[in-house]
Length: 196
Image 1 (cartoon, rainbow, N blue to C red):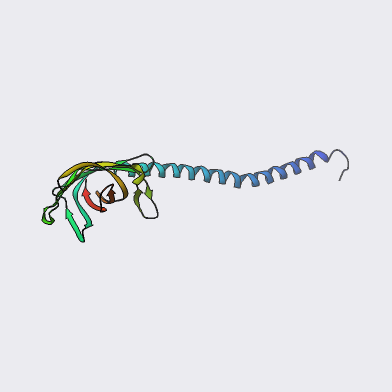
Image 2: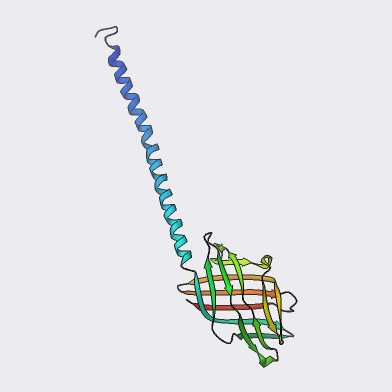
């Protein structure tokens, strides 16, 4: 074996190669992690697009019957509307929905109240509640109003209290609308089921 400068290049090359291999071993996990993160991001993006498409399919008109239930003067009353009506659902980009309740007539002549006619109004931006698995909103703050005919008198009433629950199954919608108009003594509960 020789001593001196003749062996130095060989030692330097060997050490340098070992350092390069060590750096590559450290870089491989980093590269794999980066690839995994990019793949996850792509899947999340696709999932969001799918959610938007699913929500878009909810938009449309659903036709069916509504039942109005309320208690007044010691009577518990429950009456379906006189004919099929259509509820309009509009899906929003943020995942919420708007529901337009139609004008509808309920025949309470048997209890001497005559027809109750509730005018149309829209409840906007009903968010999806993942805990309940439905779209739900306490919408009293929206200050919606509707023309209502009761006891033969028609006037515009503001919604004093309102809670709406909306769910979907296949091509059907189910709407529960608990509401009370300002100036009325009773809360009204509407239950609607309709198909596209």
